[in-house]
Image (cartoon, rainbow, N blue to C red; front, side, top):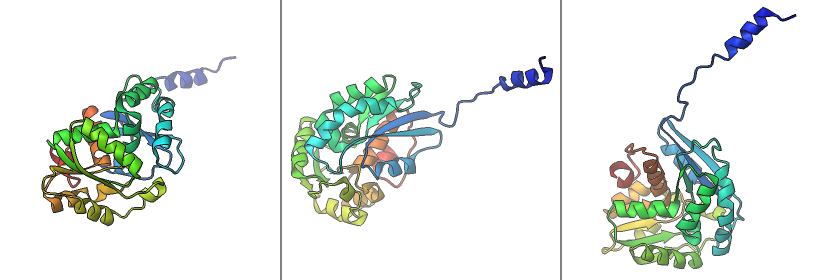
Length: 257
């Protein structure tokens, strides 16, 4: 025998009200290195209300070399596919500067869109290039934590992108677990030591470095624009998602561009 009151409860439970959800402004996904310990904090620190941030991680040993980065290419699509498989992701980004330039932007975009076909694909090095164009920089000095085998590739990549690389200097660190521990005050000193009068801007490369903590100080001390990987990536992914909030305290890129 059917219980009428139970049927009423079941019927009422189907009268669901929906709204636009917590992340009604945009949803952005980042594919990180498995070893990454800095980017997630930096993005969440600057996340505006209404913007959803989602992360996936691609396997890599604690060794940042040309060969370990190249091996990331085949991992990007399956990682991107885990980011909001309902298709609501607006932007997807491979969040590794050196990996982006070793693999190449076109391949990165293609792999990301295999996994997240409805999202706008970008990469960390793409964000940096767009940021340097936004501040109208042509001649740059580059500070990195990398081995020279990656520094050489980076210099060529930026030259091919239309910039004059006046100098590039790396800390010769191989382990991501070492890069994340470089003290921000040292990063500031290191970046400023590489500046030269004919440079339009200073670029501090690598998402693992905690440069976001001191990018405003570097820019103020140098008296010229300073770009760092995570600042540029955040700016790029937010703009692609049509999030144009001005963020103060992290350089003119985020506050003015």
